Picture 1 (spheres, helix red, strand yellow):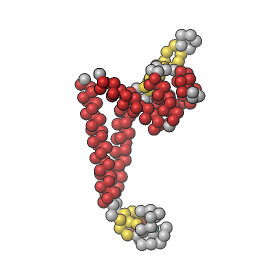
Picture 2 (tube, protein in one colour):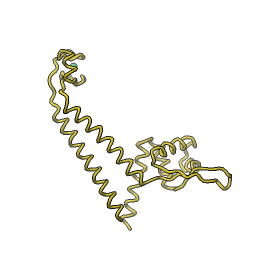
Picture 3 (tube, rainbow, N blue to C red):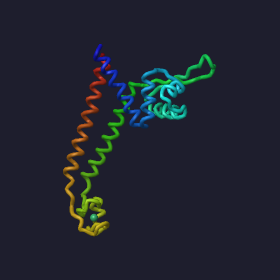
Picture 4 (cartoon, protein in one colour):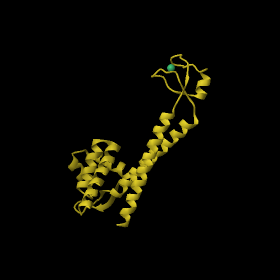
Length: 186
Ligand SMILES: [Zn+2]
């Protein structure tokens, strides 16, 4: 029982955290309001957060567009028109994080391949950019910013750091999948 409660709290934090990453403080307030009041309408969220209704709606549509919340269209019995009731889709929080991690992983892998398949040259001036072999040939191995000679750069430390980060993310994705599988079995 204690464990179930504990994991629920972590989930809520992840949902609010993602909202914050997407849009900052206003998104955090909307996310917290959604967790405090499941099936809230945009008007209820606006009064709970003190945010303008248009800001709330914009935030909700953005979160909805990323499948982080779901909306149900219901008739407002007092007024007779239709309103949407919104709910945090906590099961989507994990898959959102998973997708973000996979994107980061792909970006890092592409970077590693780029580092592995290119030679780099640098003049030694900290503010000047690194150049590829092809660029350096065009420049006759002379920096176009500071005129110093371009020397071969050892990028093995950078490659090691990229490999380390890539393995770390792969582990995180695998661990999250294992956790998801064991939760399905329960
Ligand atoms: Zn230079």
